[in-house]
Length: 289
Image (cartoon, rainbow, N blue to C red):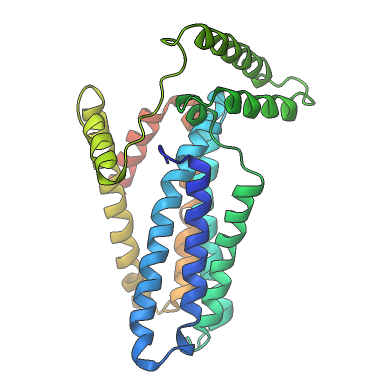
């Protein structure tokens, strides 16, 4: 994302994920001895797509969202993870029902379709991050994106972001002229290394200086949140079975609906009380529960 841009990486990851799902659906057409390795490879490739799309989506959202409501913007994006789980669980319930899963290739195609659609929409509709363009030295492209933002907002009365965008464009124009007259001026460019050396260099920059403690703390928070979430989701099926609620697709739908109150709480409180306070409060509440 820092080398090629958020938008192309997000679109490529979504298309890879969709392609892996579609290829998995073709497993029954292969020889019997090949089917399991085929599915393993498709699942691995699909995981690469998911791994590339999630951070790219949040990075792009954080840089495209308006500053005054950035938390609302990011949390709205995060809500669609639950929407996707509901889509996957609901379609599984409709396709499989109480059967033994013989229609799984159809299901694989159905759940791969949204990734294809989203990937195409990224290329056709979504803008690249102006912050990335500016840091890469692409001042003209940055101005063009911001001007398109201004055009899309100019028809809305009382839009507080319009003046801020216009000021940004004017400031970029001033800096661009200054850069042309002095080689020492201009944007701070992203250093584009190659291969593993680029990754190692980026990680070393992240893990030294004042950003190190914050990065490690946030990594720990995300690790423990994921550990707790997936641990509970693995255990909850056993709990449901004890009350004779054994349909795995119905339990997944029920479990996903249980996340809605928390998402709604985050959407309406993060911009008001702050990210740290809401995150800490939510984690304490989860521990108490």
